[in-house]
Image 1 (cartoon, helix red, strand yellow):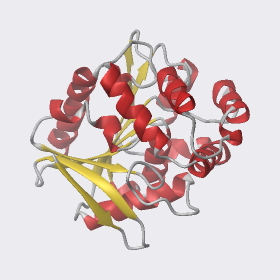
Image 2 (cartoon, one colour):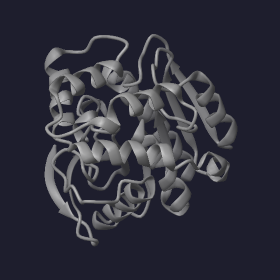
Image 3 (cartoon, rainbow, N blue to C red):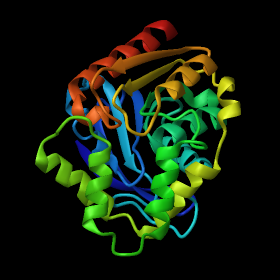
Length: 270
């Protein structure tokens, strides 16, 4: 595992974890709101060493820079493209969880030629009309002030789970959420609610794997079928009994599914 801070051209520095073969197929991991690169820490050891896993903490999150503005999906997607540039990667398989899935979709729309494939975990077809997200915004996020109450971060992270995970691992994710300032919680959630590009998803041409836990408290089943129907080359894998953060609950299974998807892409491209 290689950890470091990488400056991007527009003045933002991201904290980035890399794992695997630097010459392997690049796989870019985009975490969910208030998470960090550590969201994928349980997954990385299960991946084949032949892959080049790149897991940044996105702007405002973890130990990356926290600029005053720039928390729309386009901003996160632009950072992702700049990160690939900085690492010398022309194309990548882009893996996104929750907010990261929205950012991955935006990346695929804005940088189609750089998207080798998409893996969407706990993804939303649209945030508008999602009663759970809207209620959480209205009841909690819009009222947050610094410092974030630890109980708020813990309740949020626990709500993403349908099965228990190791207490130390959950503590890690709660600690990462507590690093995120209240303004970034608000701006990132507001960006998701305001950036609705559902009508454009059908323009995505990259092969796509949608992975969803059927006990996801945030993303409805209908969204998964809508994504599969809209994206021409999409498949859906359902994890029975898993929640929104299925890659925390079943990291080895998710890593195996991801590895098979990437292998299929590379074999097809030969």
